Every structure is written in C-alpha cells, then in structure tokens.
Amino acid sequence: MHRTTILLLFGFFLLAPSFAGAAAIVADHEACAFLESIPDSCFTNIRAQHKIFYGHTSHGSQIMSGLALLEGADTLYAAPAFSEYNDDLGHLGDLSWVAPTRNFLDAHPDFNMVMWSWCGGASDNTEEGINIYLNAMDALEADYPSVIFVYMTGHLDGTGPSGNLYVRNNQIRDYCLLNDKVLFDFADIESWDPDENYYPGETDTCAWCYVWCASHSCPSCYCAHSHCFNCYQKGRAWWWMMATLDGWSEATGVAAEGGEGAPPAFGLRQNRPNPFNPVTEIRFLLGSSGPARLDIFDPAGRLVQTLLNEPLPVGDHGVLWRGEDRDGRPAPAGIYFYRLRTPGFTDTKKMILIR
Image (cartoon, rainbow, N blue to C red):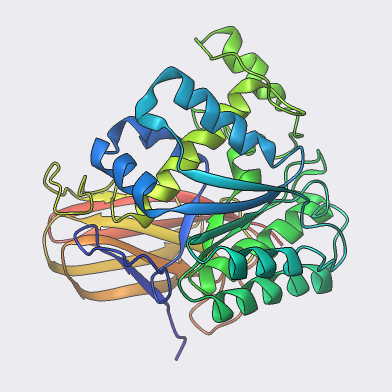
C-alpha cells in the first residue's frame, strides 16, 4: 500500500527551541501576507531567544535589507542579533562554507540559528552538487542539535520551469518537505505578486515588482540586484518563519506562551510549491475534530489518489502528494484538483504537476 506522510502542525502545541522532530516550515510567498497578524509577543520572544549566524553575499543581503526596512518603519520589527559572514553556498558541491559555520558555532555557543544563501550557485548546480549541500546541512544539524538550520532555494535567473534552476530548487524543496526542515523559499517569494499572479520566468530583477508598485504604495530602499519590494517581501516572509518557529500559527492565531487568537475555522490552502515536481504539500485547517477525506482528481474528474481518509483532531494539517496514482506510479504532467471533505466543509483547489 502506498504510504502517505501526514504532517500535523497544531498551533496550540509549542515548538521547542530546537526544531528537531517537528514538521517542515516553508517560508514562501504566502508567508508574506501575515506580518500584521503576528502578535507583538512573538517579536519580543524572537529577539530574546534567537541569535543568528548568516552567511551571504549580495543576493542574500536582500533579506537583511528587508528586515532593516521593516525595523525603520516600526521598531516592533527590530531584528534579533545577527552575525553576518561574507560568503555564500558557492557552486557545484562547494563546501567551503562548512568550516566557518562550525568554527563560529564552537566559539559562540549562545547562537542558535544558522542561515546560508545562494548567490547564483544554484543555477549552474547539479543533482550531485545539491545533494552535497543538503547532506552537509543535515550533518551540521546532527552535530549541533540545539541550532536551527535554515535551508534556501536559489534566486530566479529567468530560465523558468524548463531550466536547471527550477529542477535544483525543487530538489531542495522536496528534500525539506520530506525531511521536516526549515526552508526559506527565496525563489518562490520572487515568483508571485501579492495578487497571486505567477511569474515562473522571472529573474532576480523582479520586473513584476515595478509593475505592482506602479499602482500600489510601495516602500523605498536599496535592494541588491532588485526592486525594494522584493526585499520587503523577503523581510515579511522571514518574520513569518521566525514566528512559526516560535509557536505561532496564522491559521489559528495562537502564539507561544499561551497567547490567544480567533477560534479556528475550516480552510483549504493552496498547495506549495505549485507548480511542482514531484512533491507538494497540501495544508488545511479543521475547526472541529472528525472524519476528513482528501482526494486528488484529474481534469476529467477521475480519482487519482486518496491521500487521507480518517478522523483528525482540530488544527492545522499538512499532507504530501508525491505525484503518484493509487498504484504508486508517477502521474503524468498536467493540471490536477484536490478536494477536502468533512461533515461540514468541502473545498477544491487546482494544482499543476510538471515533469
């Protein structure tokens, strides 16, 4: 029988400072929308609990520019302590970033988060090269279990879904989803505007940012290689990632330390990544406990696979679909629909599988 991985993400469970054993956290374009929903207590907790070692060059500086922009607008968003290191993840299995990471953590045991970004090195990489990166990050996690390691995708380069970068980024995404990692999805943030328009062939320049800001009020700042709005979105997504690690959930409004929000409701979220190959995550919120069924259909309405059919408790849930049919065979590329049904709720959304 095909084995379905179910990720349970309950907003009312508190995440420990170490992320080991929890479900994947993916900061993508959807994360940008929730900054104003995060309780003030989360920002205070994050500043008190986290010190971050961040290795980056110019593209990775976009996150720092976004954070500085937000802090300049409101001191509520003052960033926690960062130690920045001038380097990036390199090319084709380069591991020169590993030793500085180990040296820093050994010398600074009070730092409990590590981030490394790409600066073009994902675009010309290979499957083997990305696996070397992923395995090195995993080894660091094993050796420093009290430290959160943040994985990243590479920035867009204009080659679109048919290019090598898209394949390599999906390799990183799939690994993070299947192995419960923390992922800052750099490329996905650059691929979508706030109206959910998708720009798969975009570059790091973020041409859609210029179009968007021509008809919307946007902040001004210096953003390396790109438009300020790109940095702004990355700063917002970063705070979502940190608040989620702190135990907050946008689905329930519940924060760490027993904070309260609105009662949970039912909801089905857009899968991510989308388009995808071959793994995507479908998340949904249950406002009451009871039976839940999640099915995948092709455009003709034929059942492709039942991902879930069992009672579940209240909370935010996630299920992985590996792009397979009921017999475990790869499903062909194309449009698919996923439908969530409970006794009091039904919703359907569209997704795209590419090969």
